[in-house]
Image (cartoon, rainbow, N blue to C red; front, side):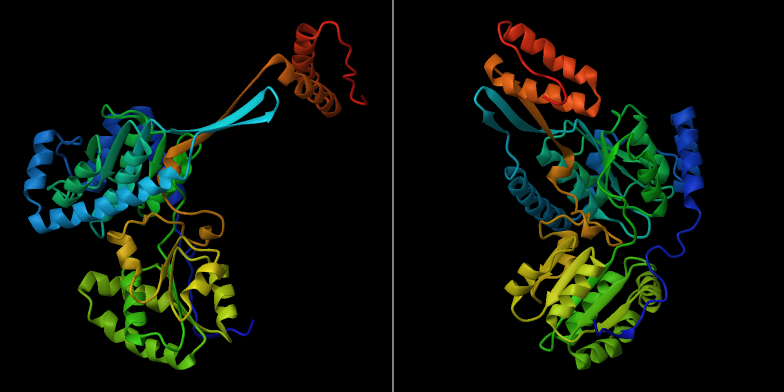
Length: 435
């Protein structure tokens, strides 16, 4: 490849990870050993909040009353879009059965997990949309128990809009407890919660590490790193919109990579010139995040043609991938590695992050090369079953006995032998490994 880097990142998503694993492991072990007492101690230390951990219906109603009507309508609009898209996703998975051989039936069932734990970040930003994305999909999947944990504001409590969103989307329990202690509460079944079968949702490095540590004991959606975004743009792209979209994603955090890949150097240079002023115009916290992300993690790459652009994108496997280039159908067919794809100037990652309907809990740090994002399917177990008539089991039993003996698994072979002996007492079978 003949890539030219007009801007090269000095850091990547795995840089400066910090020594979080030991800290998280110690907190989880302490909470598991001492239960709610320990969780409340960590909540007081990190959340700086001593109010109700589990919100009552009166508290939920009071929070909803504080949310302006227009914002309520926007949340309901986003919820409806996410719900309808999730319902379409669910329709792609069906219970099926198939007669593999005469008398031998096999099938699959899609069974939702019983208890889903949804984490909603509320530290740097109040992620109202995360409540919509995680709770709605769990509800559509058919989970019986849906719980939400989110970090309360010190001395205040949960943000009213997060409470409203979690409630209208179908949360059964809403918990004012964040961080590792929130993840532990759902995993260990504290404060009257059922033990979560799966824990989903974004979070900081401590939340991500807690999910990583608990994986296996509970399911998780994915191990997430800092959010990342890549834009593919050609000569006809609007440089102001491209630059704005890059900055909009860089504000996520100081370590959130954004990348521009183009085959038109003048566009790349124009975008590079515009970004600093767009960052400078942001509010203080957003500006600090975007400045650091752009300085240390951003890249601008010039490729020879669109085939090289697509290959570069697939190598990066971005969480969010935007195409602002001609012939969108070509890109849709050609691109293979991304969490979510945004085709054309008329849509943007921000739409997907908030209200368009597709889920914003997506694979980061290159994980899009092997997995997709959160969907109803993450909350569902695809299980299999089989049944057979005696005649239908005959050939399977013979093959099973011989394969098992060749493998050295005599116990497996005998489970087939006894059925043949019972069902076909007048027949003789050669069930040796060399049969």
